[in-house]
Length: 350
Ligand SMILES: Nc1nc2c(ncn2[C@@H]2O[C@H](COP(=O)(O)OP(=O)(O)O[C@H]3O[C@H](CO)[C@@H](O)[C@H](O)[C@@H]3O)[C@@H](O)[C@H]2O)c(=O)[nH]1
Image 1 (spheres, helix red, strand yellow):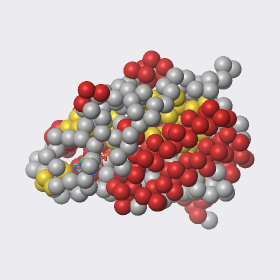
Image 2 (cartoon, protein in one colour):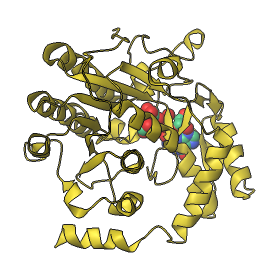
Image 3 (cartoon, protein in one colour):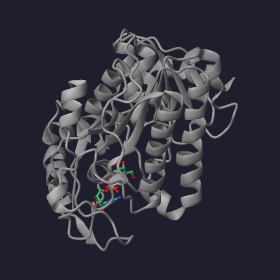
Image 4 (cartoon, helix red, strand yellow):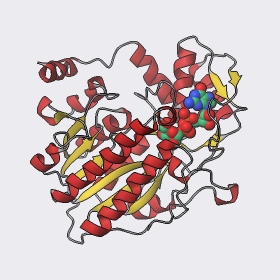
C-alpha cells in the first residue's frame, strides 16, 4: 500500500516560531533527547509519559534547561484521562513517541503491542484532531517496510508498506491512521520513519543491538551476535534523531519522511566498532536467531529529509558509538543523577 510522500494538510499560515509542544513518551530514550533539544530551541514543552519504560532521570538535561514538575504529566495514552492534557493544555504541536518500542516484546505479546501502538496512537490522534492541534510529529520505524529487495535499498518513502512482525504492523497502523486523520480532519503531520536509533539512555533489555553490545562489553560479559552477523541495519544516533524531530516541529507537515544514515552497517561491523570504542577486546558468541523471518537488510533513503526539512545526520557511526560508550561509562559512574531530578521525582510522587 502506498502513502503520499508530499506535504500533507499544509496550513500556509502556519507559525514557524517556537511553540507549545507536548511530547508523549517524553521521558523515554528518544523522547528525553527530543525534549531537551526543543527546550534549547525555545519551545514551551510538556511531557506525557506513563513511566512504564520512561525514567525521570532521563529528563536531567531538560530539568537543567528549565523543565519543572508542572511540565511533566503522568498518564497513559490508552485512557481518556491520559490524553486529557491535549484538550486542557492545547499544544500547537504533539510529538508522539510513546510506544511499545521493543520488537521482541511485540512478537511475544502482539495484543499488548497493538493496545499501545494502535489503540494508544489512535487515542492520541483523535484528541489532537478534536482540540485543534496544528501539527503531529509521529515516530514510525523502518520495520514498517518489512523485507525490502536489495535493488530497492536504500528504501524510499513511497515503497510499499509491508511489515513482517507485530511491531512493524502496529507502527504501520499509526502511519495509516495519521494519513486518515490528515485527509479527514486536516491534521497536518510528519511521520518519521526512523532507522535503528542508538545512543545514551537506550535500555531495551533484549533489543537495540548497539546498547546491548556496549552494556555487555563494559559489564565484562560476552556479547551475542545472532545468526552470522552479516545482516545489516541503518543506524542513526539519537542526537541526530532529536534534531530531526525538533526541526520538524518548526516546519509544516511533510508526510512520511525517512530519518536515517542511508548506510547499511552489518552487525559484525557494529561489534567491531563497539569493541574499538570501548577498548575491550573480547570475542562475541554467535547464536542462532531466536525468531524466524527477520528482516535481512535495511537502509533508508534520506533525500526527502534533506530536501524538505533541510536535515542531514551530523554524526558518523564510529563517532556516535564512541559517544555512546562515553555516556554509558558516565552513567555507570552515576554522574547523571542530578539533584533537580530528585526534586522533580519528589514533587511527582508526593
Ligand atoms: N536484539 C538483539 N539483536 C541482535 C543481537 N545480536 C545481533 N542482533 C541483530 O541485530 C540486528 C538489530 O537488532 P535490534 O537492534 O534489536 O533492532 P531491529 O530488530 O533491527 O529493530 C527493529 O526494532 C526496533 C525496536 O525493537 C526498532 O527501533 C527498529 O526501527 C526496528 O524496527 C538484528 O538483525 C538482530 O538479529 C542481540 O544480542 N540482540
